[in-house]
Length: 87
Image 1 (cartoon, one colour):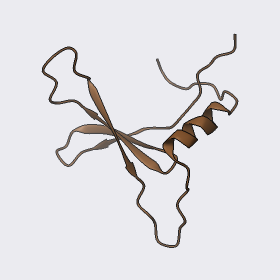
Image 2 (cartoon, one colour):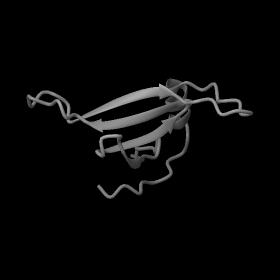
Image 3 (cartoon, helix red, strand yellow):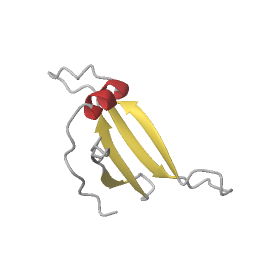
């Protein structure tokens, strides 16, 4: 059976205004931000929180009209590119 994993997006580690690490990347015309859940008080609470926001329009640039869901569908139709994840 062929490997079903496909690369969906890339993430970059950045610092929040409070100096904590976060990850950010793009899918379609949305920016994805991943934060450590500093409010976790129980094991059933998630370790990380993912937030999405529309990309900011850049002057003289027409932003893509692809939604995140359409982007996922398009990526699923691509051939596997391999994985460079260390885990």
